[in-house]
Image (cartoon, rainbow, N blue to C red; front, side, top):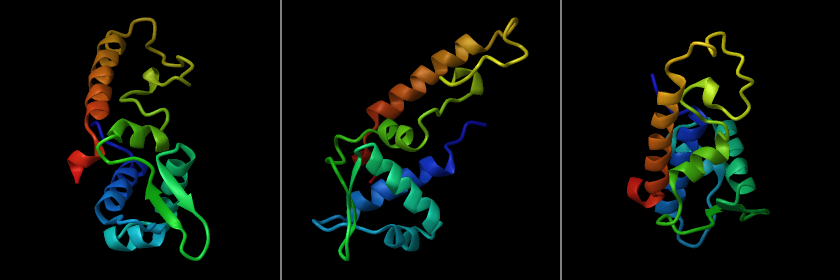
Length: 134
């Protein structure tokens, strides 16, 4: 079954929260975790990944936290997903770091068709902006 990872889900939820409530101030990982009843530790890691990938801005100090770097109309879902799951693919053999260690690589009949499906999924995630899930 195709499914987003928990990191990807948290990235989408955190970005959605920031887009909805950010009115000039930063939000904290704790605030997001409490509002969505999520794991604080995983939310914090996801926000760090989003900051490292220039999707959010991290503010240090007492009034620190995170805010979106761009308008939600400009942030695609693929940007959020790839920031936390750089090698996300629908099957392991399509991953860039895959060593083609599949025992069926000689006779596989589904890799190429699945690569086409992956391109379509990527295109949908690229075309879908954060603003559309708010």
